[in-house]
Image (cartoon, rainbow, N blue to C red):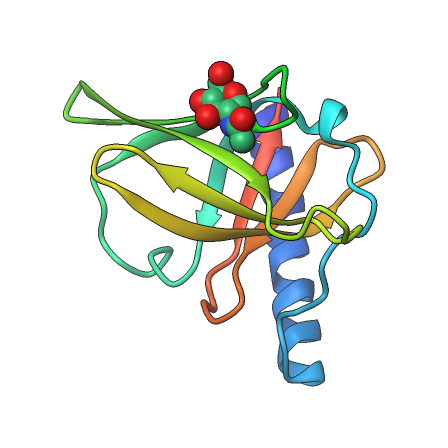
Length: 146
Ligand SMILES: *[C@@H]1O[C@H](CO)[C@@H](O)[C@H](O)[C@H]1NC(C)=O
């Protein structure tokens, strides 16, 4: 089996067990503590998203690239391809509460202007798989780091 397919299978199991945990505990607020931001930087590929996992989407190769700014904020570049055409949106991420050790971030996009929640709900020891969500949304975002 190709490495990528193996990764996907692994992640699907991850998502399944996380969803189960969330359903059993009745909340999605298990947030990673003391995230190592430097290790988190780089390019992440989205492999599953809920609920749009069940929706139809033509977008492929959805990825996010994170770069640490000098002032401690994070530059965010989200990209995907629809019919061979690249779409992208750029923004900035910062700790929702600088005094907290929880991996709760705000992501601010410039065009169109919007602010969203970005919570890291799970990260593996090697920083290769992550699950990202928000306070009210049910969707989980699983990424592979290359
Ligand atoms: C941090 O640096 C980035 C990139 O230079 C900039 O866009 C942002 O406004 C700065 N934020 C703060 C809070 O200084």
